[in-house]
Length: 246
Image 1 (tube, rainbow, N blue to C red):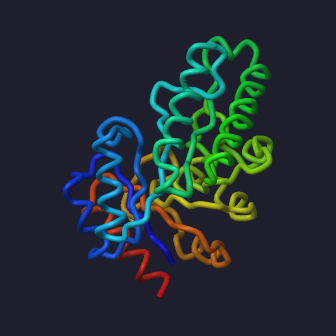
Image 2 (tube, rainbow, N blue to C red; image 1 turned 90 degrees about the horizontal axis):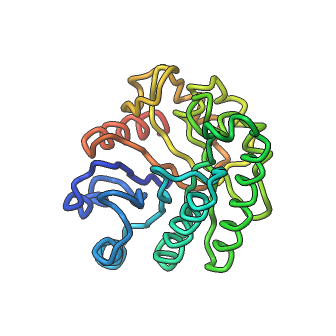
């Protein structure tokens, strides 16, 4: 079982310790402190070559919307995600993207937002294919204006070549874990909560039945990414996961 670590707040100097701790890889959150500038790409190269640390990428998402009806925003969203794919396709094989959301304008014509969402996914999947990588769409936390909260919504988004990232914590807020477990899964995000909000708790501190989840994923052969608030919490989740899967 391959387990990666991911956190928006990790001290980048700690990443050299991930392999010794027991992680096989790092999922880069390609914005803010982890934006894919020259320094970050050099760090990724260093971690790959010197520490044999595998890489996946969570594409940028803050202030972006692949379902936007504002054409400049929609275009900039695609530009940033494509740029992330192009920048590190030689290091990472899997890229995670968020579905779009229904903006105040789109609330009056949600079908148009869904079409823009689908068109964006066609373009991003084509870009990924050209670079020999896979893009995956992630199910979202249960907030009304977000697309992709439920399995039928994700299924409707699946264009040819688009993979699926199963976010267990998000699914728990939508009471949809079992439904998502019946879907084909290409990438997995793990974090806990109490079923109401996206808390990103250490595994075992919320109400998710992790033994049940891991049994449901027993045929899954891909990567498990522990999305944690800190490295210390990531280590605690890793210990918990190893204990219940031995």
